[in-house]
Amino acid sequence: MAESAEPISVWTGVRAMFLMLTPNESSFQTVEEVPQYVQQASPVFIGLMLLELVVGVLKTGAPVVTVSDGLTSISAGMISRLPHLLMRGCELSAYMYVWDRYRLVELPWDSAWTWWFTLLGVDLGYYWVHRFAHEVAILWAAHQVHHSSEYYNLTTALRQSLTQQFASWIFYLPLALAVPPSVFAVHIQLNLLYQFWIHTELIKDLGPLEWVFNTPKHHRVHHGRNLYCIDKNYGGILIIWDRLFGTFAQETDKVIYGLVFPIDTFEILYVQLHYYLCLWQRSNTYETIGDKLSTFVKGPSWKPGKSRLGDHDDNPKVTGKEVPHDPGWSRPLQVYVLVHFLLVLLTYHDVFQNKMILSQFTILGMIGYILLTLTSLGFIMDQRPTAAVLEMLRCVAMVTILQYGYLKSPFPQLAVPIEAFVSLSLLYWALQSFSQLLSIKKKAD
Figure 1: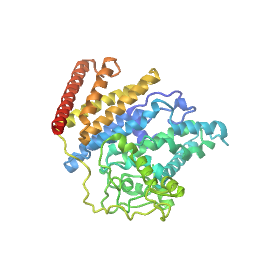
Figure 2: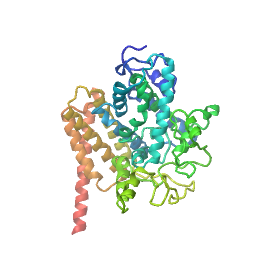
Figure 3: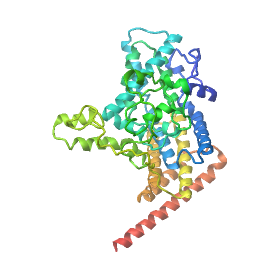
Figure 4: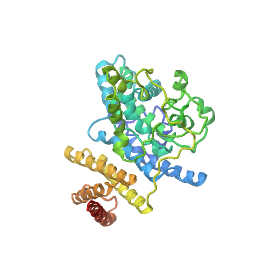
């Protein structure tokens, strides 16, 4: 058994993603010894996304992902992990609290039986987390983020919710009555990692494995807004739960991805939070307290006089000819956004690497800068009129961060070019903002 939490190899990360780790090599006595499988899987994520991009072009002649949608998905994944800079994950913290105070038995941490039991228990817990996230409107407000892309590729897997983690922990607590936290800490990560590779259209059918495992074919259905796809195939690793509980659907008609009512934006905070405002506004249209509360605790499609989950009578009809939201924008601007996204990704990685030595004030400041950057880049991709002013202010913040040494180049020889690029960016957007102000003044006159 492992004695300390050491960095995992890329090969170990690949095997973890495809559930190929043995109980012997992934059993640990304490939580502190458990590797950060998800955090250290970045090379695997990047490698598989690039592979999918190349294979997609070779098979279809077109990329499987657009710049705007792909960056929005990755941005959502980045935002979903920001709370971990300030606190331990809710799922593990709540689990350890229950384990320390209320456990009934203590299964052996080094037993293969405990390992397999926990794999099944975590996956069953995830099924119910996932199902409730579709059937309770306030939980759907968090989970809808993952469904908001109208594309289906490996970047979609990273489109995660900032707020879902604050409710999902409840469903795993029964395991804390018997399963050691170290075993749970392994399987909550393996369950998440497995679900990355199933977000692809390039794998069509896996034969007999389709009967037992959640596969790209089954999960494509889950992401569809076709009537036959809605609220189906909730499984994480195993599809047997859906077969047992009556929520399984086979892929038949062409799947049209995304929300029933597409949001048509790449502004990341809107993607994350807009449905909460939608629920609040909807509840205010009802008169009774019961109806107002039901807006949040019943299904997303519920209305007064309808069953708990509501119905789909008001859904737009899916024809199979729907075109994903993809507004045209210039290639130079795409390159600009990509470069600045890579720079903020480096900052993001650096903050996580050094979070133990950074002050809380510095961490909060860097979180603010990351959110500002992702929001501003979303404004540019949306081509909003206010994008120039916001990006100018962001570039001012970026110049300040560079001056104080919080944004460092991974290669010393790139330090001067990066500073020059940021300065030119600031100048460009300042001129753009000035030009807009002149246009507004002329119209006013």
